[in-house]
Length: 181
Image (cartoon, rainbow, N blue to C red; front, side, top):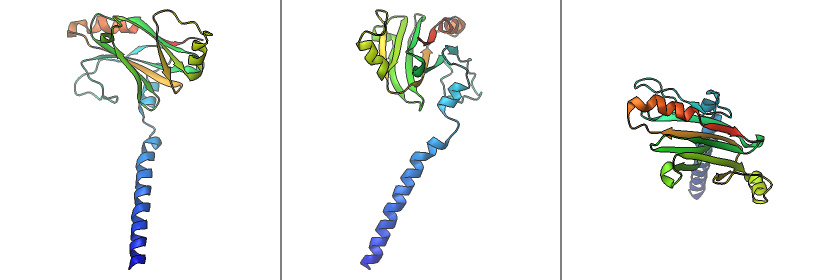
């Protein structure tokens, strides 16, 4: 009887381990990820304003149709990344995501930044060069360090009125995003 119980417990533990491994590896097998969806937008080293979402239309990124979104994809292996621009006088936020879609940094204009967005995004090696003053960074640039090279930024604007959407989207499109060599 004890031998049977040991086999039963061993089978349950092994089954649990296999179950957990399958659940954790399934997302890695999916070809339709946030990274591939962002790649399809042709947003490498440039700000791309996403088209306005209409209620009832497909929303593959799960975005709020009230907001205006700008996306830029960066590869820090090509050099430090930057994101800069003057955004409208309304609430906005910016988030930096790694390739897995996990936020590594986020800020809003309510953090005392004002309407000027000026981010420098560096990997660990570039941050060391920055600390050794081997990289020049303009005064006032907000420095963000990333553990990975593959990133994308997402800027969200909240227009106070529907009539302001086009002006806000145009202002967001003027933002610069890319790598500094």
